[in-house]
Image 1 (cartoon, rainbow, N blue to C red):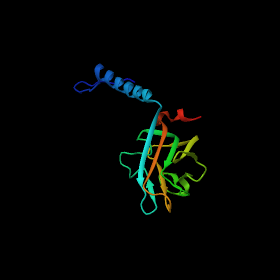
Image 2: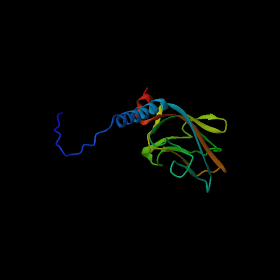
Image 3: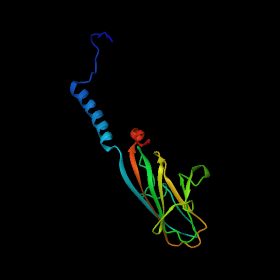
Image 4: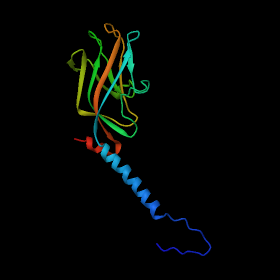
Length: 166
């Protein structure tokens, strides 16, 4: 595009060094994202049973998290709920204990693994930024003390979530 320069006017054009720095910054940002790529991440949280109930969610846990950091997506592969006794069970949801976000219950055929119920999500349980797992139980009769949840997920930057397909 042609531009007419009028005498007496100031033009603020980027210098070669400024252009080089801007391009370099963009490339480094892109390279960091590519290098980060997919990685395995482990997560855990625990709660104390009080009055026959407990809730573990991504909002009230502080440094313990049951969901991805901003800018990342989780593909949850394994989740273990430990500390339940007898016929007591707990449910798993995304973000809230709402029927529309229900995932599973420890009484839904989880694989017994030592002292805990083990879930393996072969068909993908994907958590987007701002989503987290909620594990809760109520009406617990036999269980007392601590409930511990731990698991493993594949974590990728949001722009790479297409790598999780398949």
